[in-house]
Length: 338
Image 1 (cartoon, rainbow, N blue to C red):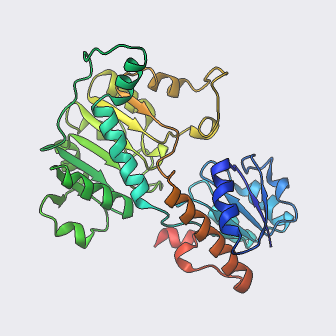
Image 2: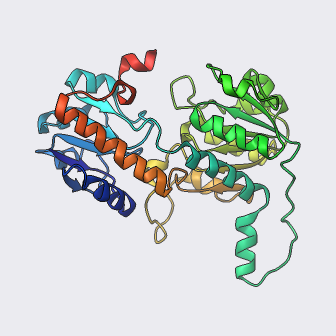
């Protein structure tokens, strides 16, 4: 069984080579991202393994089919970059890693919030230059604040629980209410309007779907408290970046910490330090002193990488032996509608 990995980094190689000792698959690591132009690299492969910024549209899928690919294994939970209808038509199975380490992402979201609020990156840079002034570094206590959490899946649930431990009141919204969270007195399910109106901090933990695309937009921001902080470790397109910029300019939004960005495909996971940033929207965001941007690293822990590698190769192993993958890991047009 040959697997071609796309958009591969050294941390991917380390995790997958170690895990593959148990399976013995023929693995070909490619640095190129999978798209219509690079699909030819999969010729002779049974499986391609992709990541969040690979563009697997209909043309790409048709080329994969012609190359003999039967399984697209995403080493992530999100699948909005795959044309599921085209994959189904081509007879190619698409599977994901539904849960690699929700703690990794939830804890990173908390880290972003603390770093943004207490100006830790700015303080660190100052001290490195022997500037020990505290002017401009004033934050606020998280204790006693109201935190809004959009999405109470595995990650959102953990984030909400951590915020309770800080002494926060937590307002949550999800189409499906979590019974464990409902038992915690400091956590309350509300509608999105109430969540926006009362939250000092809002953290996004919903998947990207047509319904959640640009869920943070001008209308949503207008309902928020003045000076609200927004944290996004979900998907970049959950936020309308232009609306975010306008909210920052008017000071409606007090600060934003973003580990994801809607147009990150051409920027994140690359060293562009010797180039000019061509993305004007991202460049504008980076000018704000109250905006913290990281390069989609919330998932990046040893535990998460090990879980991703194990779950992905187990899916390939299942497919090799039976032609099927566990339903909990397979995504299709029908499963998205359920």
